[in-house]
Image 1 (cartoon, helix red, strand yellow):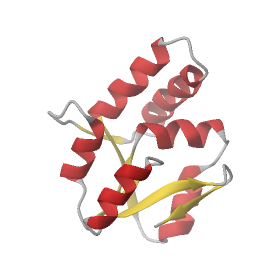
Image 2: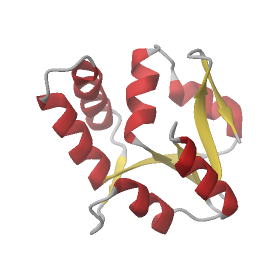
Image 3: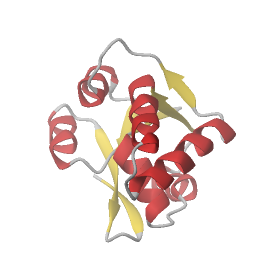
Image 4: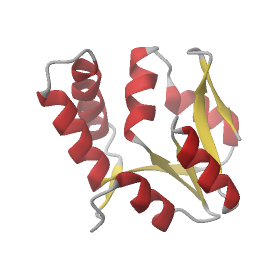
Length: 125
């Protein structure tokens, strides 16, 4: 079973652009998967939710979605989410992120990524 790790910017962008990422991920990988979020991702979402910026409402929606869908949380001692993802991701996982630098670093390790393309759909690379 594939492990899909969701990054903060991925969650926010999928909600902003009204992308049903669960259905799109299913179409992309066509095998059983489990969704995970890192404890640091949840902290980032909570922090963004408290700010008075346009992403706040999407962060709030993302937190609600994580809770409603019972995504599994990976507790990590890392303070930096990107470092935690780089450390925890392996060949059995796919990281959903829009961070180009993080995607490049993951690709060098042979780890697949899923990202938002053209504000409309997801692509795997």
